[in-house]
Length: 482
Ligand code: BG6
Figure 1 (tube, rainbow, N blue to C red):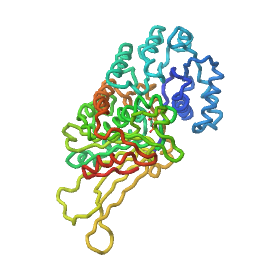
Figure 2: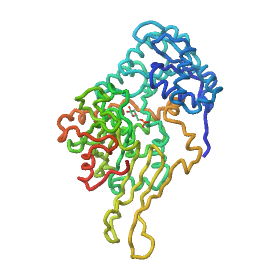
Figure 3: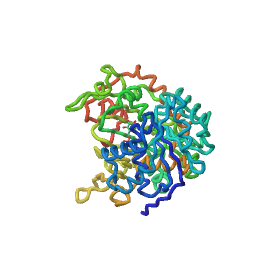
Figure 4: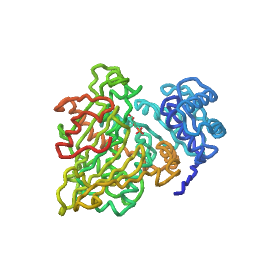
């Protein structure tokens, strides 16, 4: 495999929220990697905006310190780090007032690509875009990048969309779901549409069910106040799991092109059926040895927010009618793992003796960590003793198959930020997609209070509440992995 770096055009990237966590931990480290790879042109400029009075020098030295703390890969490359930091400027702007805007305008060049990255609370999207327009920072081709959470429900997402679309064309708006920037998530499309093997059997005639698990061993950390408002459903299902579901379930797009793909994803979301109350399991983690409980971490001793959710979901469309999708995500689970597993039906006519504990053929795509694919196959148990069957994994990890090229894969933010500059919206969510996702989530979240079992507690380091197993056992199935 050849790694090809195609340099992007010169740009001015303005990051609002320049002193925040996302800028320090994800965006600037991602840009540094792209700088090292020589994808960023020498005259690219990154302008980080914040409220604090800081000189360029003191901002750069803060960034250098946090790069060393994390640490960011290749931070020891002093020459590249020095060059990269020199291209970063700091601008103090009062986004609610008039201070700093004219200086910011003076810093922007006319003949380069211009992008604004709103790494701030969604409540500031409206005011920042209004001020940027008033101060004439907005050019006809500029790009605006917004982070999740994109709203809290359908109504708030609609408001945000209205605020943005009042000032920008949809082709200028880049709504980030960083899962779409992950190499292995894009691989779902390569696997499905780049091999003729799978597509003919990728439907309810051959697929028994599909599982999507996004498990994390960490807790909510210092994000208690945000997370307690969101919960696993809004933090993870509405966006990341929904995107995985779309890529797994969508029809082949006619072209590999942003709107062709987003049209197909939208159709998947719109075909999601109503979720019955007994098809939802909500959980929250307790304390364990050396680990605080969810309630202690979020600071609310009676919080009813879920840190785990499992759902049985169905798609009311021609391809998937009758094939359930089981989704689960949670924090403080046994391991950190993102995995999609496609379980195939048995052959229509079974000629062998029935065998207990046979799980059947499945294709598991591990998205992280240890990215790869495992196909579980039925074969004959070798040796004498008649025609006994056994199951073996055909295992491929990308790291083994691709060698050092697998390690050189850009992380999600590296790819996404470069795509913004390139003007490629394929890996970003369109406004109607986000609204459709909320339209499906809202009634489920509105029914929390009426769930038959309420909120189930689970031990940290487990695989969530036992009731999530019951969800599958009821259908004579089992969760895989974890
Ligand atoms: C974020 C969520 O969007 O994704 C976090 O807000 C979650 O709660 C994170 O931990 C997981 O991302 P990743 O890339 O570590 O799988």
